[in-house]
Image (cartoon, rainbow, N blue to C red; front, side, top):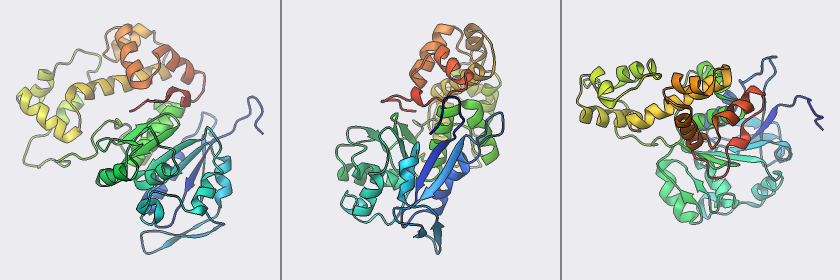
Length: 341
């Protein structure tokens, strides 16, 4: 039992099911296995478990993985993550849990945070954990998922959904986005950005970004919006108009807006707001600047404007956000029901 003030890492249990995708099984270990506090202590403990006693678990590749822990680990977890599997059996075919999977999930303590990567959402839905809640999965499975689980509010067009104590993500790389989001929610932007740098991935892709962009890799013969984005990031504290960004690429506003959405998956205005929110979060966590100064430095102009944008994006005020992270606490309480990013 942890006494007041005693350090205990947040325990993440990763449930390995037969037919699992090795890449997605490794995502939680890669992301949650990195963060440390100022004293060098790991902030998370990641443990892989099976629904059976220790032993091999089949993958969708030409090898199995040996899992050293059984379902009893689920009873000790603060967060349980269910990666994708291609052999979910009745879970996928009929929308119901097997007896051993139901028994395993019954061990999860009330209040434990649940998350899924890709088709792992089928497991949460079959367990009734997504009824009446927003959720997502891989875009190619979304229509079938909705038919199978009509009580779930399926959104096929986002990378991940944070509904407080239950989070779901789309396939593969979206699992990285989801795990980084949870690190950011728990320990702040600076910690998540450090993990992203070490993993060599973008530090933040908004959950509302589209899963499927029709031209994800621009034609090399066509101009891109990369230079405009870099230009804007260096001037977030200044007023930036759409035409200013378009001029950086020598495009008309209409062409630039279309090309930007094709490449990034969101509008230039939405992207700018996201970047300013991230800038404000970083300053709130890492500096003693006043609210007015943070607002100016992040491009919101006034503290009131910053307050409105952070409240919309994070569900908390700038003052509450700073108090949480400057006092060393996590941010799990920020992601209340209905929070979606």
